[in-house]
Image (cartoon, rainbow, N blue to C red):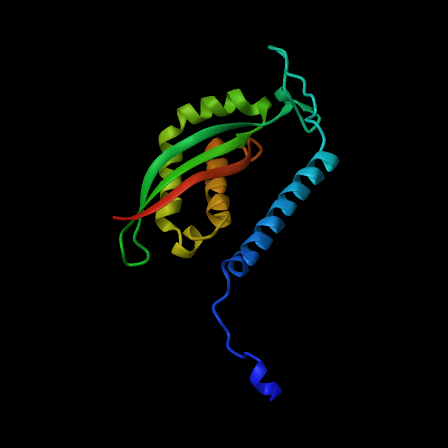
Length: 173
């Protein structure tokens, strides 16, 4: 008759039993937050002091004076069409170049004198380019072709250190 004394019915959990998981999670989050704050205070450091550059001082980058660094000049900003895929595509192209400072004045004069020729050569390269070259991530082939043409127009392959294409946007014509 011992079996009759045991009450096997399961009743709804009490209100206190429902809150226990929430209290445990809240306590763990609080402990984690306190732990992070303590760790940051003990392991962190104060900001380092810096010196401001006085007006008129030159900039030094990688151990080189500002005047020894190459400069960048925009060469052209133009639109060119390409129909080699069978569709008319319009490319908006910006071309710039890195120039050694000793050639800067000569480059500016040549750029001013040969501006239309340079635009024509860049447009010709874009119009005749295979579409896969215009889709390259670094545009290496197009850079090489434009640099070759510019070196011919300028008459010296040592003026331009590096050719930059900051923007090449394609749209349907």
